[in-house]
Amino acid sequence: MKTAILGAGNIAKSMAAALRGLQERGENVEPYVVGARELSRAEAFAREQGFEKAYGSYEELVSDPEIDLVYVATPHSMHFEHTRLALEHGKNVLCEKAFTMNAGQAEEVIALAEKKGLLLAEAIWPRYMPSRQMILDLIDSGVIGTVTSLSANLGYPLTHVERLVRPELCGGALLDLGVYPLNFACMAFPGEIRDVASACVKWETGVDAQNSFTLTFEDGRMAVLYSSMLVQSDRLGVINGDKGYMEVQNINNPEEIRIFDLQRNCIRTIPVPEQINGYEYEVLACKEALEKGWKECPQMPHAETIRIMELMDSLRKSWGNHLSEWKK
Image (cartoon, rainbow, N blue to C red; front, top):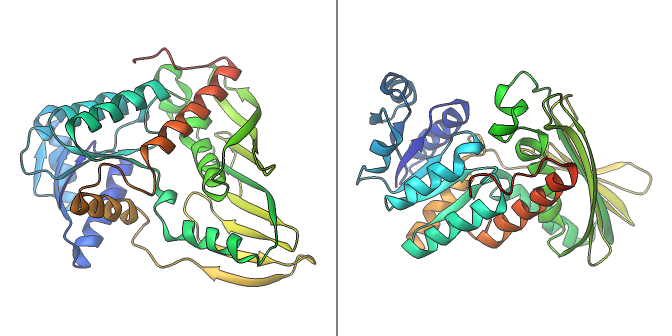
């Protein structure tokens, strides 16, 4: 599977490391080509990351007939434009989270992919990791009893990052960070959501600097979630049952799972499988989908991508910084 990376920033380097690791492991995955807005930058990336080719424009990249999959690694304010560009040129796409600026854009590119018969997937990496099924299996096992609530948080001090403080670049904590607690909750509790309550504190530019939101599900379970670009948080996910609770260390990239009894004693520690860097799982999911002729990945189906975007739209609308009218 010849893989292209559209964009040459930091997240592109992480994906490049995963592609190299998969190739070294004997997987039929090739770090083939990278594209950037300046040829010199793309060529430097290709040399450093072991790619065969480099292009100085995204249009040139998506015109390469050898590409099997394009990974969109640009800022999320540009995901819609670049995903659509790749699809219009007949390329299968794995697009980094947040998938688009809003649900309307998500629906449009998904419809385009379906029309053209192409694979389109959202690269929200915890959805593809083995830790996801491990957590679900532990819940189903009853080791912590009947589960009725969870909490999760993710925070980093990131106000120095320009794109996160600029509204026109889809800045704010929710799209960049809050998407992880939200996905954590929706993976652990896959049912319908009955009610959402939230609050946010805004940065001086008007974007959400930190936020909290509570999801109440139709079956009565609740998820209390928090994200911030002001502070470093413990990144902990806690799932609560009537016989104990489960801690997931780092919801962004789970490191281990701990089980506690009613006396708060840790009775079991479960490590997650060793990985290259975590990005490999979404690549392997796309590889399987292409081999089997699927047009979406079961780990993150299109309907779930749209549901998550709709939830984030509703949160931003309630905070007065809705993006549903932007760049449809």
